[in-house]
Image (tube, rainbow, N blue to C red; front, top):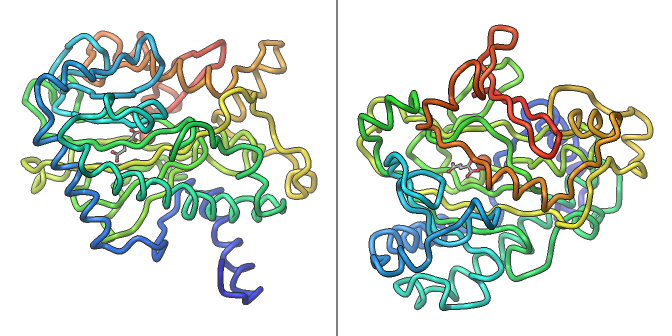
Length: 358
Ligand SMILES: O=C(O)CCC(=O)C(=O)O
Ligand SMILES: [Fe+2]
């Protein structure tokens, strides 16, 4: 992006175009955070999860069903405020309110908030902004098109998005059996880009065009960039939202803890997403068609159902998340269907159907 060599930029745009169209994810290196700086951020996440007081766990407990947000502390008993089966996953999620008010952040991490804020500002304003410039180039639009028109900037370092410190403790026998090894079902993130840091404990899997789940390999210091549904829709299906899940690791890693740092970048909440008609790429090549958020939004529009705003779309999915240990919902005849020999999760949100590999 900075080379000043037009040919290098054309090549980069071509490579990006292929990656986001076929695989729907990218690996990024040399994006301006050293391994040392990254390890410092992981150390802070570990510190938070080892030191958050019981009082803060209670006081800052999330309420996803009523807020449609993960804001605050996720206890290790599933993704509902009420305790369900122990899943060993704890998280702390910063949204705009947590960035703005130190009373909403665990006391143990307060001395380090300046470092966490600076890291998020850099990820948003340098890394995410440049990725969006690259994607705008793929759409043959001005560099700041997605940054100016789609990316949310309201409310602190992550806009309407959020930053997460997650800790995955090893499975218990009960959770492993109930969830069939799944820690997150196959899903797409809702926003613009999700910035994940490659970690040595292998659990993240990505669904390929060959319709197989594959572990994302470890590349020290690299960033794994997932494409959110907003970009699939804005690009008229030319970008594929990354289908991904979190699964149990290979046998030699079942006993280790996994830390995960994630910045979820968000689209403007009040917008209803439609393809960027002014894109010369879309004008020339038309809209792409495959089963995904873009196609389902088109179908909903064609049948006269008003498409949800970005805020409505992301909040309902959080509010109605089904735990992987929920053996009633996770069954064929309930949420699951068999489709062309593949086990798929079929859900409906605001009249829009979502079908994803389990
Ligand atoms: O921890 C990870 O690697 C991914 C988690 C994830 O996909 C999500 O929270 O949306
Ligand atoms: Fe995700």
